Length: 68
Image: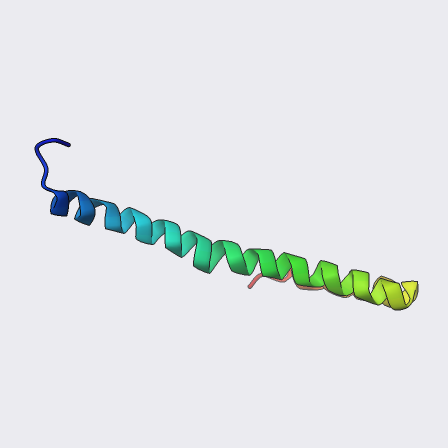
């Protein structure tokens, strides 16, 4: 570390930061949204009437079983 210049350390750290940004911005966020929206929709429909939530559940299972 002492033998490297500060520019060398910065250029060595940039690819690691880009990989972390790629994971959090483009992988973790869509995964959180894809799992939170169906749960919130099921709860919202369940608040109106329990049968609406029961109708939605098999559709969500079918959608989750189909590969992208």
